[in-house]
Length: 186
Image 1 (tube, rainbow, N blue to C red):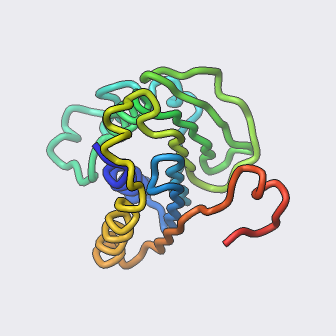
Image 2: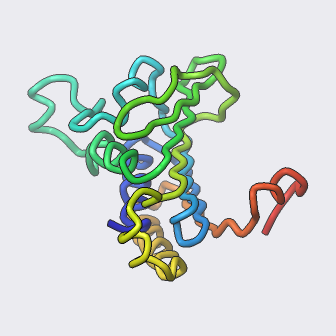
């Protein structure tokens, strides 16, 4: 519905992954960029092909798990929805791997095979150009800075309830070319 809803879902996934650090970066209120990085357990390479399919989860392995579930949601629902309205890229590495994997999704399916890449522990989900294919929705969100306070509010609430997790949130103000030429951008 809104960029803040996407951030909320992605942060919940990070917490479910056992992250002790969650970093959120947004640009233009989340319409141009939402990036959520965590240091959780990561996503196995063999799970990447179905990661963004609807009704998919790695949080249940047996029917009996339904009675003891303690997660905040199912990654497949949120990510699948995001792939239909934005460009999603996932970079992940699990413990014991020598390298991570990066893969892009569109319309609920993988666009390319997972490519080996350098990665830090955990998962980074990037959603770019949110609602690029929904002109009416994008027009209703023209004042993109309205969602940033909502995102900060969500993260503040998570921080109060999850005292063992470090949260950070920042606005990205740099253009693509400024990132290339500057070591740091504020």
